[in-house]
Length: 165
Image 1: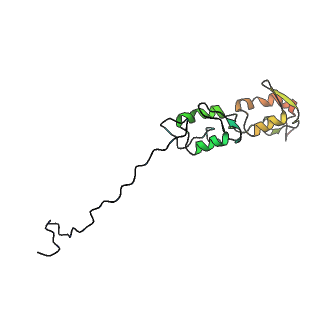
Image 2: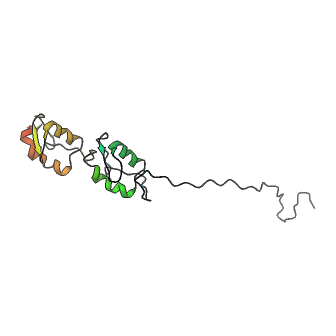
Image 3: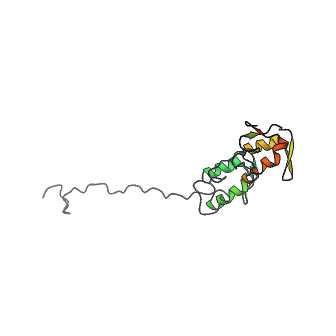
């Protein structure tokens, strides 16, 4: 009988190390920040909705059940996956105007601009300068349904003109 035969009929030496490879530790579930106690965390939440971004990042906003935060911080939480699906669905309607989530608006109409920025106009019971109104339109803090009506309401008072006027 050869010296290397170990009598188990597999014709090998059986001098292998019997220890098994290490088992990796289990993956822990991420801990969600306060207020996001839903079990269905979202990988990404676009807080403005429809792929839009906040245009007033330093403004403050309050979301139901969460502390007051800046629009920038809220957008960052959404992008890093720290907002649940359930909460994400409710956020756009709560922050739309505060965070400037709407698309830009030409308050005088397409291709037209304000020439009397210091004049004041009444927009649904609120007085503001034509210049401020135009600025608010450009940064997206005017809702589209209101923007559509503005040219008829402010054209004369704000001196709206275009290249063809």
